[in-house]
Structures are given as structure tokens and as C-alpha cells.
Image 1 (cartoon, rainbow, N blue to C red):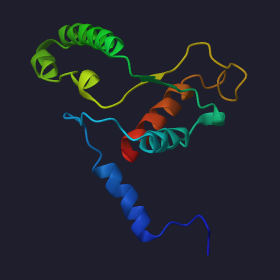
Image 2: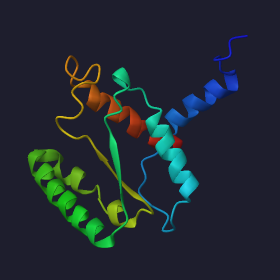
Image 3: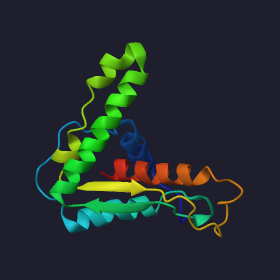
Length: 144
């Protein structure tokens, strides 16, 4: 038996997690247990990553003043984006960014520019760091 073969139930569970991935609009106001946060970050670090570059950096924001400053920046960008959408502006403005203030944990995902040029794939496929980071974020969403 192949040690890497998943059972039908395990495979179904993966597809279920993908299909039922949810977009959070309401958040719990209690802190996330440290072991839960660790599991989520571990899931992110297990994401597919070209050349094992793992270009992402996670920054945990716990300072309330900083959260408010980030919220203001995101709200400003939301306004600019809405104006650029023309006739879709009203629908876009229904989307709120209050989760930045309401969520139990706020993680910023950063992708530093000019990073680790020696890593395989960085010079030849520069867009793969964005794809790899997207995979890490998706893993967090699925694990959550």
C-alpha cells in the first residue's frame, strides 16, 4: 500500500473544505488559542512554494492603535477602488472592512520586494512568489 495514498474519506474531506470555504463577515471577539494560531501558520508554511522559497512573512498585529491605523488605510483604498469600478461601485461599497477591527487576530501577509534573489525560481519566475504566497493564504483559509 502506498504510504502517501489518502483514503476516500480523507479525499472527500479535502474537497469539502474547498467547497465550504467561507468568507467571514462576523468574527469572534475572544483571542485565538496559541496552539490554534500555530496550526494555522504551520498550514501556511506547508503551502506549495516554487523552489521552497516561502517568500511570505506573517506579521501579527496586536496593538489596537495600529489596527485602527491599518483600518483607515484600507478604508481609503476601498474608496479609491470603488470609484474606479464605475457602475459596480455601489455593490463594492456594500463590502465592509470592519473585520480588521473586529477579528480576534490580525495577521498581515507581507511579500518583501527584492527578497532573497539567490533562491531557485526567484530570478527566472519572479511571479511565482506571489503564487506561492497566495497558496499559503489559501491554506490558512482552508485550515480555519
